[in-house]
Length: 242
Length: 242
DNA sequence: GGTTTTATAGTCATAGTGACTCTTAAAGGG
DNA sequence: CCCTTTAAGAGTCACTATGACTATAAAACC
Image 1 (cartoon, rainbow over the protein chains, first blue to last red):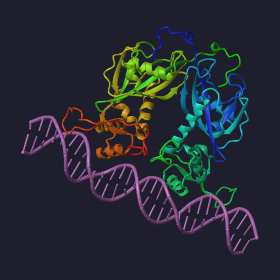
Image 2 (image 1 turned 30 degrees about the vertical axis):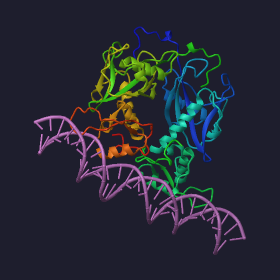
Image 3 (image 1 turned 90 degrees about the vertical axis):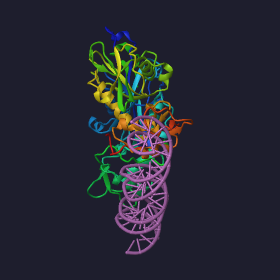
Image 4 (image 1 turned 60 degrees about the vertical axis):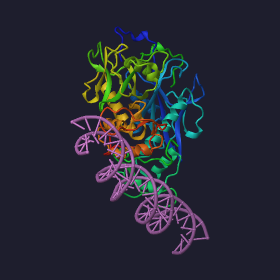
C-alpha cells in the first residue's frame, strides 16, 4: 500500500468494483441458487448471479445487502437478518470482456423464500435447483461452485445450518439442510443427539408443536441458539468434499 | 453484474485496487509478521503490511506473489513455492484518506527466512514478533489480526502447518508451529501419534537425522505429505479461538 | 560414567460417534 | 374404533480418537 507521491487517480486504468451474490436456499429437499437472466450483452440471455456495482460511498458488504434486498424483493429489515458472508474476490483481468472488473463475491444463506419478484435491473430472477444450473455468465459458475463448497465445509464446524431455516424449525428440517447440502443421508437419532448435546446450537421453543402437514408424530420446535461454532465439529461421513 | 448500456468507465469515481500481505512465520518459537515502514504520508513512519497496486493486466494473486518477492527479496522460484492464500477484501470507503482503495488481502505462510533486504519501494522491511507489533497504518492491524485468526483455525483442519516449515523438518518443529500459533503447549507423544496416523500429513525422509545443534536424541526428518485436509481435525485444547 | 535432554514407544480411561433397536405420538383407512 | 403407516424421539453397544500419563532410547555435556 505505497501510493506514489503526487499520485493521480485518473492516471491509472480505472477498476470497476462489483459485488456478486451466491444466494443459496433449501427448498423441497434440494439446494437452490438465486439467479437472474441477463438482458444485454455480453452473455445476453444467460443466467448469472445477482449483483451490481459498489457505489462510491458504500462498502462491499453494504452493497451486497442492498443488492440482495433489490433482487429478492424483501424488505431491508428482513434482509438485515439474513446470513451474508464474504466469499472471496475474483480479479482475473479478462473476467469481464468490456473492462477491468474486480468482483467481491458474497454468499447468502436464506430460508425458503417466496419466488423473487425480479426487482432491480434484473430482467428475471428465479430460484434454480443447484444441479440444474446451466453454464453461467462470466466466471459466475466458478463463484457458485466455490460458495457451495465453502458452505458445505462450514456446516461441519459452525452452526451455520440454522441460517437456512425459518426462525423456528424442527430438527428434521435442520437435518434436511445438512443432507441436502452434503448430499448424504444422516442417521436421525445420531444427528439429534449431536445437535442437542452441543450447547448453544439450538434451544427448545416452548408451546405446542407446529401444525404438521403430513402424518407422523409432530416434531418439537427449536430456534437457533447463541453459539456460532461447533466444537467438536459435525463431520460429514466419508472424509472429504463429497 | 449488470453494467448499464453504453457504460463509460471514466464516468464512475475510480477505485484503486491493491493487495496487502500478511506474511507470517515462526522464528525462535514466536510468531512473526513481515512489516514495512512507510516513508510518506499518510502514516509516514508508521509500520504497515507490505503490498501495492494491482497492475492493469495482472490478477490480485499474481500481484500478491510479485509483491511478496519484491518485499522479501526472494527469487521468483522460491516465492512460487510458498503458501499464499486470499484472506478477504477490505472495502470500507474511508480506509485510505486519499482516495477510494479496495484492498485484497493475502496471507502468506513462510518458513524462517533470512532478514528481508527491503527491496521494492519499502523504506524498510523487517520481521516483528506478533505480540510487539505497534498500531499499524490504515486498517492493517485488523487485517493482520484476521490473518492470525484464520491461520489458527486452519491449523485445526488442514495440513497447513507444514507451510511454516522448511522442506525437511522434525516433528518437534512441526509441533512448535502449532504451539506458537495457538499459544498453548501440546503433549508431545499425542501430537506425534496424531500426525503419524493421519495418512498423507507427513512422510518420513530416509537417511540420517539432521545435525542437531543442541543436546538430546536427534529427531527423524519428515517432509510434507500429499494431503491438504485433516480428517478428523486436530482441535486445539479448550474449545475456541484461544 | 553419569547426568541432562529430547525423541520415541507404550498404557489406560474416557468422550464422541456410527450403527443399530425400541417406543411414542400423530394421521388415515377400513 | 382398531389397525396400519409414518415420523419423532429414547436408548444400547462397540469402536475410534484423544487426553493424560509412564517408560525407554539415543544423543550431548561434564
